[in-house]
Length: 283
View 1: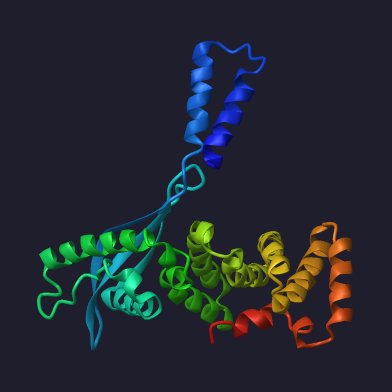
View 2 (view 1 turned 90 degrees about the vertical axis):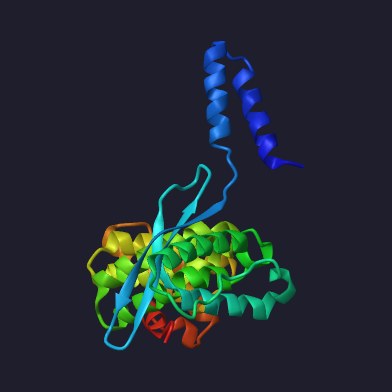
């Protein structure tokens, strides 16, 4: 049963039923329906690379752009990865999936000529093709390793910046993480974004931006409730109630939920603030 086709047929019926539209207008509307009903796919591009030279090392980093096709999202977000990051990622996948990755080969490691422009160009294209093949492998795109490859270094950096009190830099870093995670959500649990949204809520609050902080915390709450993430629920509610009073938002229902949680669970999970939880993540 094809839900996508069913949706288009139902919309077409609505367009035709009792319609006074001209044939041309109906055709335009039908094209719009089909355009908005495109399947969602993840696309990867490695458009550039650069050589990094440090005191004791020299290496190439590749710009990895993540896009989502279809009608939902066209924004391009990028991170930088070394060949060693790809190699570590591939090793993790092989350990978990083994035979299912027999036909997905990581471009070979070069023993010489790593900084030759032609070799860099060839590897750049090969790594781009490698990511496309990984995405086409169902077990990989649904695994926790997949989003971790694209976001974990930046997420750790963002949390480290929060611990250092550098909230503006942390928010900028974590916003990139969130945008990539949201592109991956069709193939991951909704809880994927919770730690990032929680950290963004803390960062925005400490930057005296209660509106943004409230928005991030409010967005994190539904998956926290649905999947029973007890360590976050009370802390998010506490922050939302506090910010809600500050912003003049209705908070009575959230206050009741928070009181019920504290009465039912008189443990550490209900006592730690959201900032304490965020600081302890990715240590």
